[in-house]
Length: 165
Image (tube, rainbow, N blue to C red; front, side, top):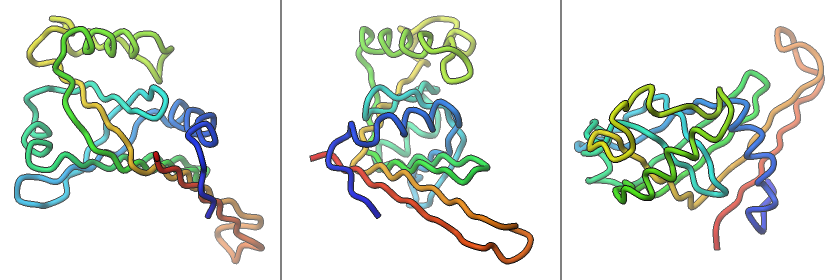
């Protein structure tokens, strides 16, 4: 395992993976302390992930009780991104509008126009933005030589962990 000393050490690889994989599993803890997972579509801005979602969805109750979430990306090449985050709702209309435009500014499939889901726009009461501030991001990879259906010749693992100061 390698510890990244600054976000810039992982930024390029993080961006490459999340732009390629796009969708991630997001876990919250429900009001009874049980894990709940769903597939969501974050867009990253540096070390911060933003998720556009229904403001008054079950996630609202989950985050009110426990503001911590886990994001997990995986692809068939066994490249993964794990981000453990503290999450908060963005309720400032100017900031919601900025995030709306951030999502629109990226080409599909990584970016998209939130108006597909919230035609009333970023000031809508139903349009929610989750801001996910990681306390840990892990980039993990696995590669091998040989066949997975028989005994591999060798397996290589790579793990890099970044934690903000």
